[in-house]
Image (cartoon, rainbow, N blue to C red; front, top):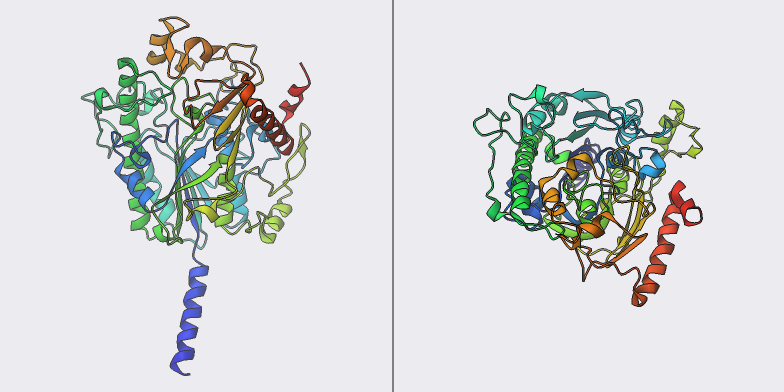
Length: 497
């Protein structure tokens, strides 16, 4: 055998090994975090590990949740379907009792049928568990991200022929102290330890001076708001250290070079004007993706993506969806044998059909075409908070349809009690709140149309402007098409009531 032929054989063998590499996936989801840390241009918030991840991957500057509510958003992340179609209209826990339809196929179930071993760690917040089924649950206080990462090491390092999918979710920087029984102290409103307490294992708390905070334009720049944001920053810094530890473990176990790593938040910050709304503060979310097989790294893409795109992207990476978004024959056969079919409440959910599409192809593109619109769909947060909204968001213009606009905007209990909101509320209905007033934040018209180039914080509603009548009409048509395409039951509200 001559040297040339021998070389070709070696290359063929190596190519086969590369092709057969285990294509692992980590999906890291934080709770109520906006894209306002170091990698997104805010040097005041120190996030060295997230910044390093962005330099080794792709930063999405136009990434959006589809509903700024924890359970509903997570159902979208794990299904690739808007919540009005998957049935998870609002919160899962306690008396809220929302859950997805029984014929839904979730991302971990797809991956299990594709030969993956799956695990979750941290916040879950979807139901039923039989639908959002993982092979195992890794323990760990969801406010303690370094411990969560360390607890995942056994799963990540397991000697298995199967690739892995790790779904790891913090409760930071969500408001509220979490489970006080798990902690050696009673944490403050963003889960931060009290001064002098032991704190979280492996974490070096980063304390921020309110004077150095960057206040986003949808919030009032007041001392009260700055104090709350300083607490939020501290919680984000804790997440960053957990990210660093998890990546360190992936490298130690030899899995980093074959792992797709996706970092997102379920939606924006837990402040009035963001969480539970479909204003930009609620919809725009961080998204950093490292594809280990791409040569182009450290770029920002202008592609507009939303959380319905996550499941098809991960399945595409796992070779379970082809480039046209069609489910592989092997996956189809495996799911068919499991007989996951049928309808529930008249909702037919076809295996392999998603509202989103894979964005793997744009990870190395700074400027994109065909990625110029996202949609959003919100119905509930808490059970008492019925306020359905539908959104079409283009590059420049955004239309919000407030279907229950006759009602005052309902508040989540923690957001109503937020010191920043209470300080402005007590000043009266004309008090400013970001680009809005207290009054027009609570009392909203049927349609809100914003020119985001001229008005990024959505203070000037153009829906009644004669100059923008054509734009309004065009976006209403797009909204109806979105509702038709996604089988939205609230489409009847165009003609009913």
